[in-house]
Image (spheres, one colour):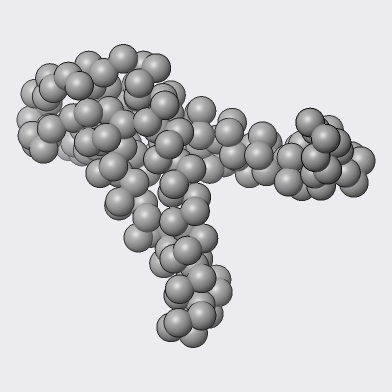
Length: 161
């Protein structure tokens, strides 16, 4: 009985569900990158629309997009499922946040390493963790247009935008 209550509380916690969603998206991104880089995009360079790209650049672009799509779907249906905004609007906002988040992560990493002389692997973790919390709230309020209402009771917040 205690396990059921603990499990129920666990799955009602938005932050835990968001961590799960982000983790699955990250795993899809990494797995897709590895597969594309080693098995699909085997030439060192590709010409796309008269631009030359390395295979790892194309692999990253495709895998990043796949990870974001998976993360969006899980986040939409498991984390912020009470949103009444249109799915197209949610997706556009989610992608916008993901792109901005990518560049924000690079900026924070650079600041931590150059300004504070933090060891790069530690700086990478610090940047990712600091952006995780910002990402949670930005997706909640911007991507899925949800209010500040507390959801732990199971009551849905019905704010449309």
